[in-house]
Length: 146
Image (cartoon, rainbow, N blue to C red; front, side, top):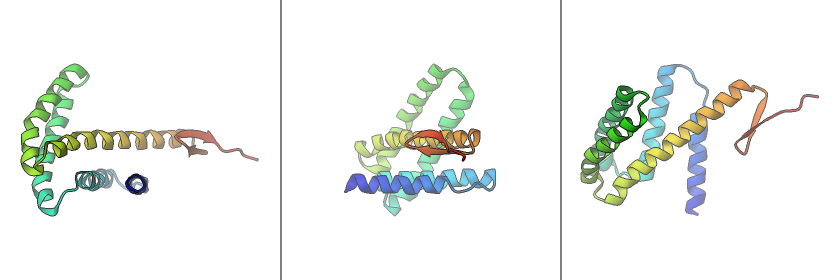
C-alpha cells in the first residue's frame, strides 16, 4: 500500500510538472513549489518543523548553487565543496529534524527530486525534437500516420 501511495504521489507530481509553461518566472516558481511539496512529504515535516527547515534548506541550496557556478567544469572540486557544505548543514538539519535518519533523507530526497526533474526535462526535449512522438515506458516512439 505504501508503494502504491508513493507511485500515485509521483504521478501527481509528474502531472504538476507537465502543466503548460507560461513564463520562465512561473516555471521557477513551479519548480520551487514542487520541491517544497516533495521534500515536505518525503521528510514528513510538521508545520513547526517546516518553518524551521525551509530557511536552512534555502541557505544550503544557495551555497550549493554558488559552488556550482564558482567551480564551473571542475567536477572534482565542486564535489569536494559540496561535501563540505553538506557537513556544514548536517548539524543544522539535525537540530530541526531531530534525527540522523531524517537528515540523511534530506540528501537522498534531494537527489531523487533532481533525478525526477532531469527525467522530465529529457522527456520534454524528446517531445520537442519529435513532436509526433508518444512516450511509452520511457521510450519515444513515432506514431504511424495513415
